[in-house]
Length: 361
Image (cartoon, rainbow, N blue to C red; front, side, top):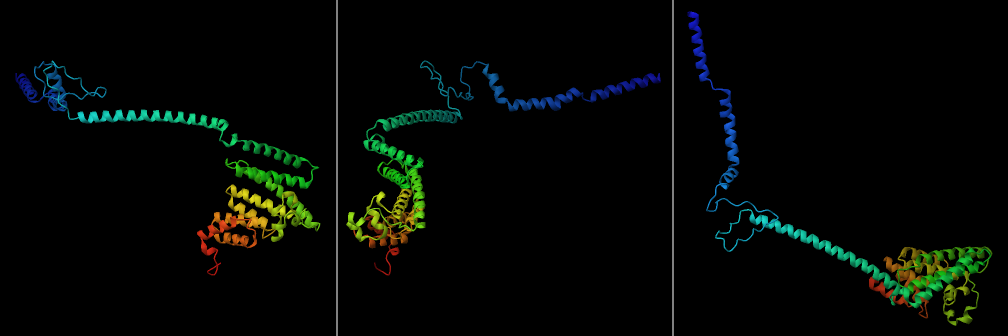
């Protein structure tokens, strides 16, 4: 009986303790699920409110703001005249959305204009090239269509053929070889000063001049070795040009044609013409070097002095240019080289102290 009594007491105590201790499910509901539900409702309260009241019909407009319009249809459709509803008020983002849409439209329109302008530009360039080609062949004022151009091209072809024939012929005389080279190079230089198309034949003229100079120098060395006079022209200068008595040394041969000049006269003339071709090609330092080569044979050769001074001016060497021009003016009694007068005026205007010495002329 005592044992049975003790068991009853234990069962009663266990039931009392179970009633006092909360269950695990109630703990989960109270401490986790309910707070999370409250948080979700608070964070999405506006959406829940919309969903609840959107299904309830209402005769008056809702106080809530309307949803943002889509980008594809930024402007809402106008209300009909029979409608009694007031137009919806602008939302706080309406102006920003409209501004963004307007910027996008402007950007797309700007890109389209750029593409259109690029296509038009490409079309103009294409048409311009076609017109340029047609002008080159058909326009009567283009250099290639003039009679002078055609005549000079024919003359160049003839002189080039003579030069190449004499150069390739081992039985041709030496004089014929260097005279044909000088004639071709001189005419090429002359052609580029008459036809202004960018100096088409300048490089060829320089090459032919060098070939002529190599042959002339070989002949000059042979004559020096044999003790021959390298300044003896083939004709009597004074009987043909009496004015040559006013000039000395190789300056007297300035009035002769190439076949009548002496070897040194041809060397000076060829070096000078090569230097002029360098000058036309904007190779001013090489032009000065070629003039120096000429003046090594005759320091008073007026043609080389005059145009070396011109190259000095381009290079900014005014003192040397003034000295060359002054020497030419002293020797040129007939004023054949008028470029010396105008060149000296340029030097005086640029740097007068390089010409005037001791306070006067």
